[in-house]
Length: 346
Image 1 (cartoon, rainbow, N blue to C red):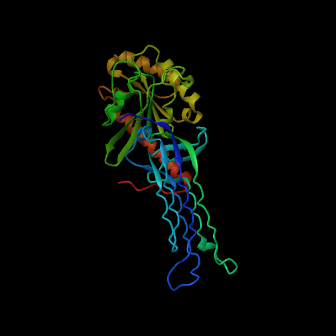
Image 2: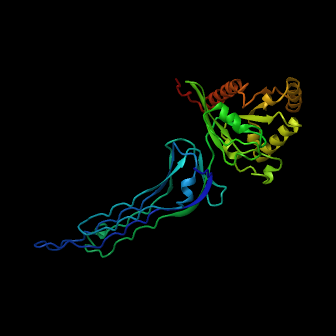
Image 3: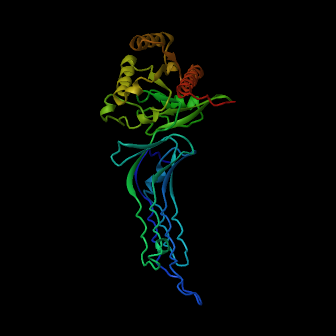
């Protein structure tokens, strides 16, 4: 399945059905009077967040969504049926933007969340509604109201607890494969990862979290170099960033600065997000080289650097447990700020 994280779609709600002009005509009944029924309401357009989806690829082939038109009213006070509703089912984490691609309409960040995008037109009244002592035979009925229409943008931001950041070839996909059951493409050339990958880290029956691997950043990504910052939105919702630095390169400090600059240039909040810095590929380094690279990286960032190897698995488990502890802490803080209670977990 191909990955698609943004698309433009057209939505239109249904028109209301027209009211009927009709009069009762039955044998032995004189002056039957008006009996025109009302038209049915037009269908609404809804958007719903559902589990089990992680791409917007379905909207690549179906881009126009139109709700049903209400049925016209009929004689004998028969009302028209309402038009069918149209429901856009999107992955959890999808943002709905106006046509200008900037105005946020709704953020679908909860499974089962539903939002009314467009209201269908009301059905028109039949002539039975207009009868009165002074107008006992009205020849007038209302037409149905027209529906609404608009173009919207759908932009997916994956829901993950931990995000992986780093330069191309920093070993992020290898780390993801070692930490979870995900099977991302792994090769010895830059930009192997062209779309975000998700993995579920299972430390124990009660310790699980989702980790996201995004394509690598290069210098000038905030200005469109390489793959740019298009996929950084997928780590905006994460509680923690794991920043992997390739220990086999010459200047590890400059590699760290490059990615930090691009993160801060994209979004100030993303730059301020809690970061765990790790020196990766230590299986390919001698003990002396490991100490040298670690010291250089710690001098640049000003805090402790972890040592990991996605190939051998060294240090991966400890790093994941540290990330999980931070995720739990951030969630507890969010619950406390909201004044609620943390949900029960087994």
